[in-house]
Image (cartoon, rainbow, N blue to C red):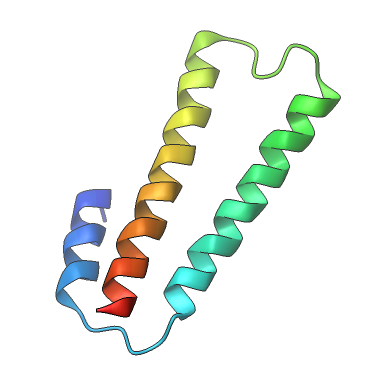
Length: 75
């Protein structure tokens, strides 16, 4: 399923609990710890322009999904 499909599905379904938001929050926190740990351990992290773009893309995607889920959960 694509991200757009997931966002459309998330906006059309009713979610009665905050569990999806907490799950994506935990995934986002784990991602931040992994990226932070790698950045601290390696002086050359992330290594290149493509890797930097990929890390930024994943971070922005996780933030966007978290924002969409909190709106869906609270509405």
